[in-house]
Length: 420
Image (cartoon, rainbow, N blue to C red; front, side, top):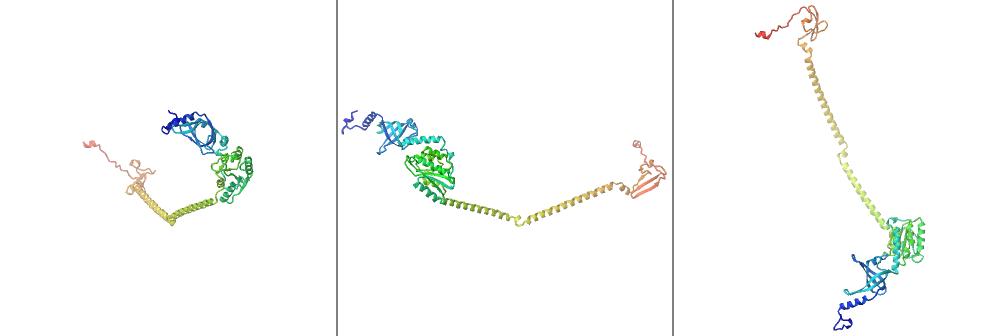
């Protein structure tokens, strides 16, 4: 390949030659320590390489950085966008894409990045001790008697909390405990203010409020002692530090995190207009439910009153009386029929008894002869001439004396002899 120095307008060097020359030249460079801010982090699934964008903090300039996954994962806390770092890297040029990048071999966080690393280690320590556990979070009272407020005196945060809370609930009462919200003594003063409010039995909830600021300005609210003091409080605590993007450790240990001081005022007291509207809606629903219930019961009562039994209560009595009369007549007829049949049976039985009675025989002209001892005489051999006898007839007795006896026994001949 001819040297690039020999290239002329008539015999120019191709792009690939220039790219190969640049790659060869840059490859001979050694490693370099580079300082910058991480603008972008890209971790692609299945690749062992992490792609970073390193931006200069002064000039509008950035470089691509590639990093082995194990180097990236070894950082504690994890590297995030916006962190300031120092990278030990080797420059590399890729001829195929014509791009320059740095191959990172070591990454160190500095400045804010180092500060964030310390805060992350502190967060992990407190989390391991359970200070951020969700089950320890307490519910805020619906309408606190007194709201405690820890903030800087005369600050915008104090004005936002007081004005917005009173706008929502005019009767709300506050007890403000002043404390510096930044500086070397800020953490100590915040803890003292919390202790004062904790001793006040009228305070039902405490709000710690501060406006936005740099990470360094919010360091007192990531202090370990402040976090433990809030964790030890019996009164619920609302953290309203900074803006939505800010998240000091106080936000994690507090019972409720408010994105701004204005949001904290919204959380600690209800909205009077909204509650009145809810009361009106509730009353309207109660009236509607009561009206519907009364209408339903009135309809039932009307239906009951229109029934025959309710319209004329004697109707059922008349019907039942008629049934009683019919049953009584039926029972009388049945009893009479049974008595008549029983009478007929008695008459028939009496007739049969009379027909079979000896008197009936006597009435037909027969008589019963008895001796003096009252024995019935059935043969002439049982009496003798001159004996006293008694003759029983249908209507009485006749005393008689036997004058004579006549044998009336028929003479029976042998049938065989008669045939002969």
